[in-house]
Length: 192
Length: 184
Image 1 (cartoon, chains in turn green, blue):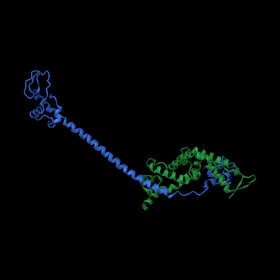
Image 2: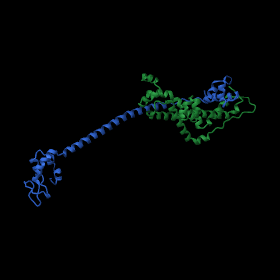
Image 3: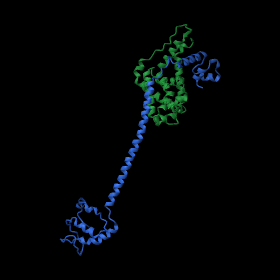
Image 4: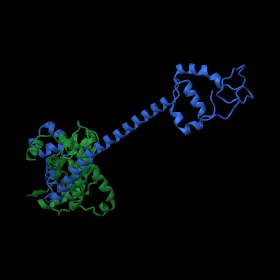
């Protein structure tokens, strides 16, 4: 069993799918080690920091992977496939919780006292995260995939099923929106 | 290189002319550049530390993987059993069809012999002579339909023309005999 675990460490993500679909829990453990916490973190960030919901979604995602392992095309990347499923699941959750989301829109506190030259870093951080939480599902997903999951523009294009140019353009607009919302902090020195 | 990468990795003073051109739409001055830098630095960090996923999730998924593997291996046996049943049924059908065809067959060679003896059984109109006596036919105009003499007729045929390929088993089967009403 230990020897088998060592063997699976050398398998690529895609190579692990076949033994998993044949019932190998050792192969599954290896894949889960690589993606379990990562995907959970993605769901946690996207789904309002709800731990139980994030765990449910992670479990459901892996169950879908196990069930549909046979239809996965070997020339594709497993990572983008998993994130693609995760992105779609988040979209469904946002649709279900549309009413709740509207109630929870936070007003971004960017008020600064006149003449203030310095600002506490914590206040700035809170303002930044509030702006990100306010983003709609599409923008939040883009932000999370690019800056939290550290995925490349081509990978994000495959996950969101849009051309790379569209990803770049959306990213630019997103950063511009954040800059405009946080413009009051522009001429202020941020105290670390 | 993407503008956000340049902003994260470099200071305003370090930018080349080409890099400044890339970041220009987002940061046209040192102040704007600094603001974008702070935004990205703080946005990347999580506000609160991320929790670890519960161990029960992994355990439940392990069980699901094992169960899935078991279901898959059983499926193969079901398909094999179904294929065997279908094949066995097909073989039985073919065998049954061939067996029935043999029972009803009368060979060409024996038909000639039948013709030679058939005149014994031709009845003249109005002739009440029982079938079985040899008659000299004048014309064959029509056949008088008579009730066949059961068993005896076939016994004569079988006795007189043993080579005729009529299945003697019919003789033994009373149900089959009762179905025969005429001899040609």
